[in-house]
Length: 242
Ligand SMILES: Nc1ncnc2c1ncn2[C@@H]1O[C@H](COP(=O)(O)OP(=O)(O)OP(=O)(O)O)[C@@H](O)[C@H]1O
Image (cartoon, rainbow, N blue to C red; front, side, top):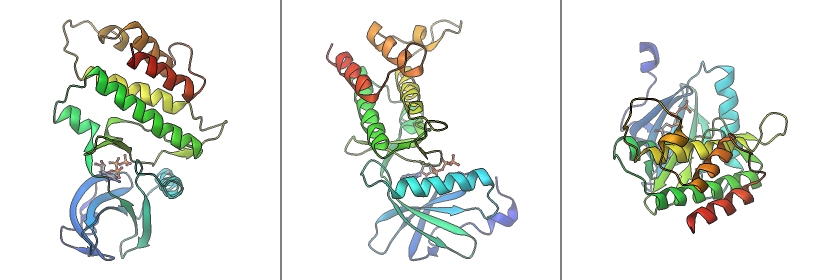
């Protein structure tokens, strides 16, 4: 949290910042604050106001968020629009992606994902990760608050703070397969009701057919890991068509 001195550096609704009009605060991260803003054409953007005293790790994350997003030009990732200095520090402007994050779909809307919906989300996540891999990027944070369901039902991935360029020593592409598995398990849990107080692992609690169980276990690295994304996509197609 911020102390009172920092509070004075917040923007307020209706403030003008570098030609943008502040509409609302949409989040607070380690780096600072995110606002929804509009330009003169009433187009929406996300403005990230970076705390002055951010630490080394945060600075590294911001550096890679800018570098990776600037190298991508797809509707499923926010575009990095610009960066400027204001009187308090640095600000980043990103394309705003209109929709609902999966965390809100589950926690607020209490949406129960059907198997077909889960397969569809899985396919789309694989497509996004494939695009990232083709651009030599691993996201490393594919979680419910970082994936947006747009109105047209397409999904988009945000928050590239932990994204890095793939490097076989440190930043392996395979970690995103684990994240996809973890993400899908959360979607399966949306229809789960606890029947017994004894704790069991997800592969026993969830109603999964044998193919789904092996698929998720392989994504999670509990059984032999997939070699590449093509294998994963093929396996998901088999599950879908059964
Ligand atoms: N491009 C975007 N389009 C729409 N909403 C976004 C976009 N980027 C971020 N948001 C929303 O803004 C809020 C802040 O997001 P952001 O990723 O900047 O920080 P965070 O994830 O809360 O922080 P941290 O990265 O430190 O964990 C979140 O609610 C997120 O859903």
